[in-house]
Image (cartoon, rainbow, N blue to C red; front, side, top):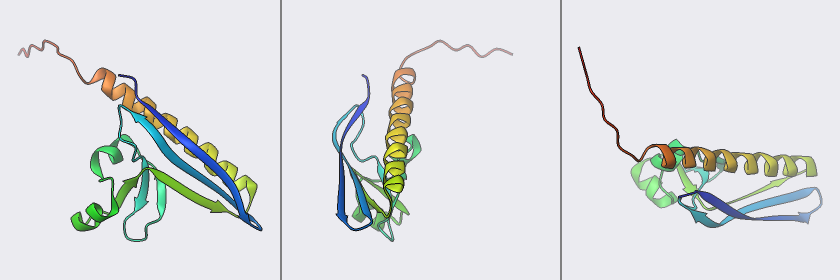
Length: 122
């Protein structure tokens, strides 16, 4: 199965020198939609999840807090910057990180399942 993540990207200018970008996962095929990693204690966005993050951290803050985990995953992220350049940079980096996650998840799902013969010899 080919893995894909479809996001809705919303750009807005809520005030003077405020440039906001919001990513919301609207469809995830072959992977859960919770691909944005947040700090549990401060509820601050950290990064797009890696394969390790996807397999290690829960998809909600309450579960992470109960388990004493430092991060959790969510299906949306919103960041506000003082410059268009900052907001655009965030958007470009986030798009690229999503592509990396999909590529790595595809690689694992395509190569891990299977069978093989192995003979150990001395």
